[in-house]
Length: 132
Image (cartoon, rainbow, N blue to C red; front, side):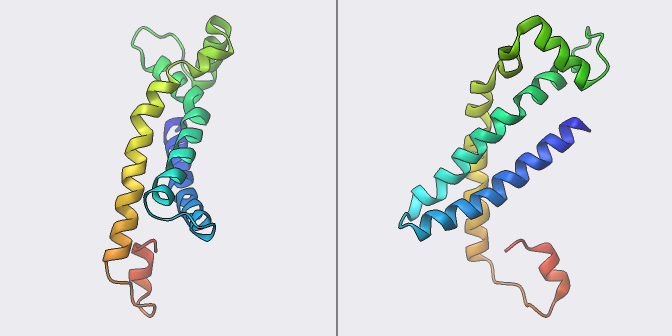
């Protein structure tokens, strides 16, 4: 459950925040690749940093030799054995792995929204399927 909730809020923040960030940048005169990549880069980095303790805890309890049964127990264990910095161990690798993925995903989403025909406002089902 913790992993699912962490991933859900992260994706929502990245996609929603990237839309808002791109609109903000365009209002302030930034267009093209800069407006397309900076928002998901910044938000994706923030999300990875915010989620890292949760990621570390879930990885810890997935270890077959682990005696911990919960995310909170793993968080306490990591903090007690590795200190506060132990909760963010591996964050740079996580950023390098996930941020480019979300920059690409947001770019593809935006491209498809631009290229696909708009939904008919009278068709309630089509509006439920499409985000833009």
